[in-house]
Length: 148
Image 1: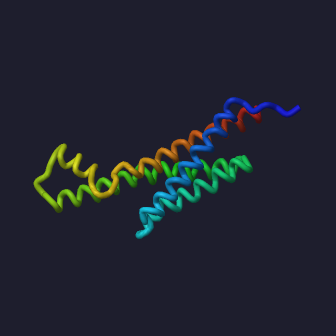
Image 2 (image 1 turned 90 degrees about the horizontal axis):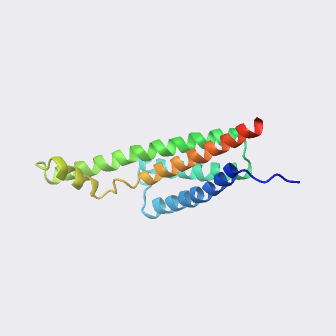
Image 3 (image 1 turned 135 degrees about the horizontal axis):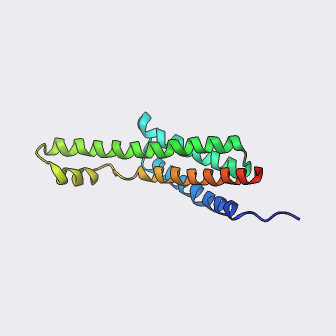
């Protein structure tokens, strides 16, 4: 008689759905807005394609090596999104300072956050990276429990 999946296994499988849907949505968004002009703009797109591929591979073939690759890609997504927030914000801040060098303090922060580049948008990449790391943790726990 086949063994019923553990709660952890069910949660991991459920996490795969928003992870893959969200990754696909971000890939589409980056392509639609033309976020491919420079090498740095292509980094999140490459990471998202890699993330989608490795999650799909892990869903089909949940092996330890695939999980390790998944965790590395998700950590890169988390890091890249965080760096992207800084890059978007600093680009906006430069625009603010060119337009009016006298802007300081909280006004400078808020104008920079609301600039032409969506300063917090790369946070979506970080969020997907975090969800992917949780997915990877659940997979590792499943492996650990199966080996015990």
